Each structure stands twice: as C-alpha cells, then as structure tokens.
Length: 517
Image (cartoon, rainbow, N blue to C red; front, side, top):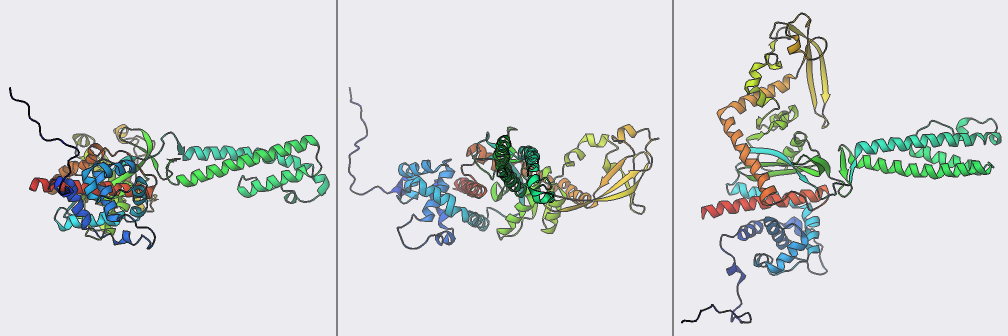
C-alpha cells in the first residue's frame, strides 16, 4: 500500500530571492486598473497643500489609491483600511509597503482630499471621455436619499423650535408684568417722571428688552422694597435669565435649520428626508447624472426635492469644463418651468417628463373631456371654450416666485355662467364659476417635451433611462452596500460621495476591460 503524498509545507523556508508582490496579482485585477487611473491624474493641487520642512509625509497619491481601492471593496472606515494595508497583498502592493495608520487616512480623506475631490473626479471624467467611454450624448438624471451619519433620535424640528420660542417669549411677557408691578413701588421715589424713565416701554421679548427688565428688577431690589417683594424680584430675575437662555437656544436652532424642516444634533448639515423605506431620517439628497452607467456628475443637497436641485446640478456639470450633453432625460418630478427654462438657456434637448405626462398618455385621460387640455383657445379674443360651449374670459394675471427666485406668470380665465350647465358637477369641483390657470410658457415647454418624448428617439431614450441611472444607484446601494454616509458635514459628505462615484466608474471600466480581454 503506497503512502499518501503531500506538497512541501515549511513555514520557515527561506527563499534565495524575495517574492515579488507584482507576481502575486493577476493581470486583469481591479487594483491594476485603479492604479493605472490614479497614476494618470494631476495631483499638484494636493501636493501644494503640504508645507515644506519637518518630518516626511505619506505620498498623497499612495493615500488616494489606498482609499479608493478600499471603497471599491466596501471598506469605508479608517481603522479597517489601515488593517487591510497590513494584511492584504493588494493593499501592500498598492501602498508600496507603506503603513499609514487610521488617523493619517482619516485626516487625508476629511482634510486634504475634501478641497480637491471635485478636481480629481473631473479628471477621471475627462479621461473617460478621451478613451471613448463617455460621449456626452444622452445624460440621465435622478436623485436618491442616503442616510446621514447622525442619530435619528436627536432631530431638531424647526416648527418645534418656533413653538417653544413663542412659549418662552410669552413666559417673559408675564414676568415683565410682575416686574412692572414691582417698579410701581419705585414711583414714590422717582416722583412724577415718565414711565419710559422707570423702564416701562413696549413689551417685546428681544435681547435688549430682557436685559432692561433684568436691570429694572435689580433696581427694584435696591430701592428699599420689603422682604417679600425683594424675594419675588430675585425669583423674576432668575426666571428671566432662564427664559433668555431658552430663547437664544431656539433662535440658534431656527438659524441652523434655515429652509430645512429640521436637522440632527449629531450632523447639523443633514436634512430630515424620507428614505426608501418611507421613514423620516437625517439624510442627504444625492442627485446623479449618468451616461452608459458611468457617473458623469453628482451633487449633494440638503433639500429633499429633486426638482429644486436640478439647476445647481447642471451648474456643477458646467463647471467641469467640457461640453454640455446633447440630451437630458429625467423623471416627471424634474419637469418644472424653471428646469425647462434652464435647459433652453444651455441649449440642451429636453426629455424631462412633466407630472401629467403619464396620465396624458393613458386611456383615463381620454375619458375626461373636462381636462384643462381639452379647452379650446381663441387667440384673437384671448378666451377659452369649454367642451360644453361655455366661454371663459381672462380674469387676472398672477406672478409667483419660487424659493430659488424664479418668476412664473400665469393667467386666470373664468367662465361667464356655470349655473345652467348640466355638466357643472363633473367639470367644476369648487364654488362659483369654473376657472382655469394657464401658464403659456410652461405649456410651450410641455409641448416641446411631449414631442421629444413621443418621438422614436425619445422612446428609446426613455427605455434606456430606466436601466442606466437606476443601475448606478442600485450598484452603490446594493452591491457596494453604501446606504449611509460615514463622514459628517456637507463638505465631507460631498467628499465621500465623490470617492464612491470615482470607484463606481473605475469598477465599470474594469468590467468593460475584462470583457474585452
């Protein structure tokens, strides 16, 4: 019976020549693609941020490679990245056998890289364009909420701060009345001086008034009041100072919230946004633009409304310095007058749906003859005619301004008499005569978008949008398991999503190159 044979195993074996780390990494490995991309980047802006002299620093190019590769492997924390650098042969090769600790990694990511990530991302996009991965033809846009690195149980709601501030101010007004009564005792000493000289003036719980009433109460204490009155004055001073502190705290909370409905104490820059599971959480709204499943542009917002983020998103795209895309396609939430107007100014073909687009193309829209689109317009008389034949005359013009400062102008038309109409219950849900609101500029934009979307080219673009931009978010959230930011603060969050976007594009390049091999 033959004995079993085993391959040689000796942990203490000494090699005549050291093993090359290069030989341990396969030719088509992701780490080689990432290394090649980063080596082509111009990082002079980052190098210039390092002061001369002193102890030597780790090379920023090495740190960038290590952090990007870690994000590609779903390693997001500084300690885990530092551990991988010591254990994983790919990290050891990529780092040139350097071993930065987690503090160095975190400081570079949150400090030096925070100021340069946009430039690094733009260089990667230019590289993708030069190599033919991106052509800037069809640009697909969408937004998605990503949870902030913040405690969901420590949310400050702006409306609560306003209410609590009002309660504190009311409490101050009651204290003002008590102090005024105490000051009546002083009038025996002051004679017949004006009330203003005794400190009685307009009651308003602002900082100046609070300070004045605290002073008045102190004056009352030193004016020879009896013991019980002095005790009451001391109590009023203590309570006023307490309420003053509350008002200052609520003022600060309202100021921090700004236009947002609320924020988290642990990340003041976060908004409170509905996530995919329909739960309100501290989160950021990330708007992404893609082409052929490459992320071409990204912006991070505190505003949960994708539509309001579209113009800033396009402005950021323009800052990259390359040509604008030929066509932009997005879902119906982006179809507003302001967004259509922005595409017109930038000379970009609009394939933005508007909220009623799907309904217009469904069978239900054909069943409703009283839809506003079915009212005939007479340009000569500037009137509309309802399906029953009633005439709607021009009533007034209304001008509205959005939060971003964009002006919209609408015309209101009112029917002459709806009482005798047999269809009034189906046509007019409100009281009085039927009125319609018409925004002619928006109607023009909608007509243009409708023609583009219903064209043969538009139908193809719409179909592609579903799996182009959604694939980017699906890959980031599901494959990369990136559903929550690991850094805090808007600038740091932008840095982190910049890293995620660069990694997504490099991984996409790797997939294409591997298929071509």
